[in-house]
Every structure is written in structure tokens, then in C-alpha cells.
Image (cartoon, rainbow, N blue to C red; front, top):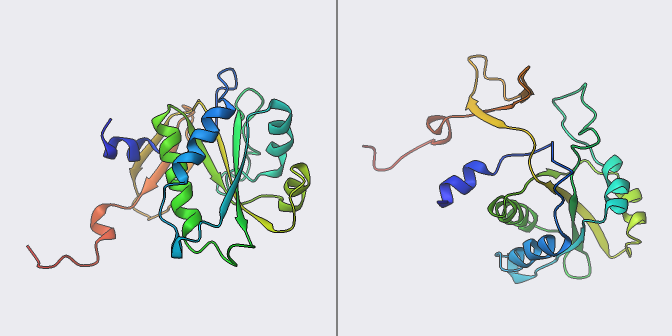
Length: 195
């Protein structure tokens, strides 16, 4: 698979095949990839919790917000839920802010997951106090994101923005998840020298 193909396959996934669980050691391998990413001032303030334990996963699941634009959808049904989670933390004894490290880390983790045949959803809507209690987190750690991971069980279709310009994603009657994306011509503000 080329790098472009890997990036194109790295779509947000919200439905998973629970009958095909991810293993905890695979989650650890993903964190090991993130260890090599660039870090502002090389502070490396991010820490992680990984779990593929079904009981812990069942406790984590209801603490997450799943899809802001799908207002009538409460998240994946039983049998379609993630089989593993990576909780991304900021170690406040190392830095007051993650800077942009958490964005780099999320992309690194997700590309690694896709390379292994998994998919996931980066979730920032989290009940942080309850999640911290589940893992008995010391105060030095701030929960930044949760990556929900598993074997994808829904097709994602990337398509051009509609004529009205709406960026809202939706699920079609065929069950496919549709994601409108801006074209390259909308992203390039300038190109120098002009052709």
C-alpha cells in the first residue's frame, strides 16, 4: 500500500466488528509508533492508557460522544462497538499544554491502526471525570482524547462538497457513511510561481 492509499483509507470509523477483537499488544505497538513522532521542544508530554479488556471497554463506551452531525444516532449498537481504546493523556508535570503534539500523535496512531487493518474514531467529547475514575488516574494527567479502535464494519465514501457547501457527514439508506470534502482547488490559496 502506498502512503497516499494509507492516508485515503484513514477515515473516521464509528461501526466495528466486535466478533474480531483487537489485541492489547497491538495497541501497545501503536503507542510505540507514536513514541517516534516529533514533539514540541522534544518535551514528549503525552502518555497513554491502552485497553482491549471487554469489561473495561464496556465502561469506557458510554462516556464518549460519537457523531455531532448524526443527532438521532447514539453511537454504535452492541456488536458494532470498538474492541479497544487508547486514552491519550497530557502529563502536566512535563508540560502545561500539549501544543500540537496530540494532533500529530492521533494521526500517527490512526495511520498505524489502518496499516494493521483496523480503523477508529478520534473522540474529544469525553466524560473526563468518570473516565479518570475508571482508570484511577492521578491528578497530574489530563485526558486529551480517546481513540476508539477495531475492525471497521461500515464503508466510508468521500465525495465532493455539495453545491450548497455543507460539510455535514451523513449515513445513507445503504448504510454507507458519506463524508464531503473540499477540493484541492479550495485548499490552495496561492501557488508560486503561477503556472
